[in-house]
Image (cartoon, rainbow, N blue to C red; front, side, top):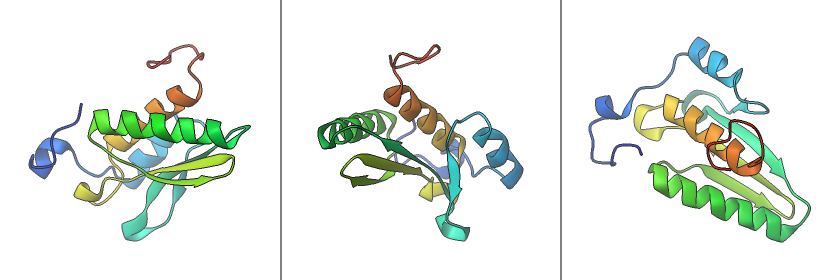
Length: 118
């Protein structure tokens, strides 16, 4: 679990540098940079066969995010959900964004080898 919101910034981590973000993205299949400057984030769109599957996935992401104490922006459409991670408290993309992105991937693909949530 991440530190509570009232924990000082230094205890919660710091923004990754540009090269660090690129290196971390290489380990995350399908995640890309979104935005720039103050809006820079990592994002991935997940597609489903039905609206109910999309909502179930979004609810699973919300539950996981609550457990982590770190919440993404999400955009839901009929058969897709875009998940966007950015650490507002450190002003950029942090290691916890990368970790949470990997947890979302595990939710989307619970049968994959190495899944921590499957």
